[in-house]
Image (cartoon, rainbow, N blue to C red; front, side):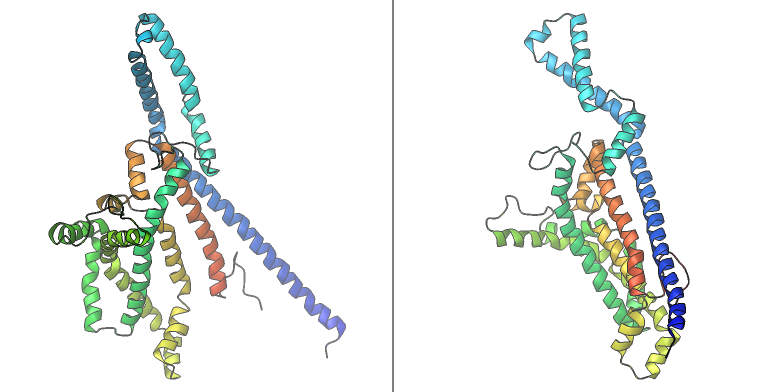
Length: 377
């Protein structure tokens, strides 16, 4: 039996270790969170500078506003009777009032920090040119309407690609050197072509020649009556985009994961498990998949982040009403609030994912310690 003094002596180092671990985790959280926040702020501010072209977009908006006021004067019979000087005075007064309402009366450097604060606080305001399908000009409504279509097509495509390629690669890792394995290696370079490139050929074959599937869009026009008829129409429109996305990356993803699993399958502890007589599935589950969970989780997390961003060219080729096309329209129209809104939300999601990944690593892999430090018993 241990004496009371001995128990107390052993409890003190344990308490110190516990307090040290708590301080290390708190310090890590503060440093990591601050670093990610600074990164997000820099990224958003650079986006504001680029989207506004260093203030040139505001000059364009001022020119558009003056042109709009001049058109209003020309269409008003009473205002057309004004003298040149009176008309000029009237135009300047109206321009001053409207420019103040639009925030065009301030220097760009001041407005850039206002844009930055509004973006970081998700006070996205109104779009300059774009509107939602319901006619709303608020950025959050515009992004909200386009978010669901992008999530639908990108989630279906990327999740199908991720899991099919990973499990197919796990199957291949057990058949290294087989004909199927050599076929995957030979087909991997075909993934050099982007998804929209495959999409063009699939549209030509299955829409233009065979007339089996629609050319693009999300649903038939006009939409079919009935809930299930609409669901069937959406599924029909999803076939070509999903097929193009999977076809463009399946072979390369399978090759990547197959090589990754082969490397871990050659470890000494895997040979030891084979010598013990464990089944192939048990070895894969305990000695291949488990040590590689951090990498798999990272890849899956990045896939989830990429779901909602959309792809500009990809959605344009398939005429898909998602965030990709919205971003393209915003860039073409110099609609800074929409561009900043998309960037801010993506930056926040990416920063949050990177922050949570380290915590998940520590959960799935006991060797990982938050904030560093030695493994204590």
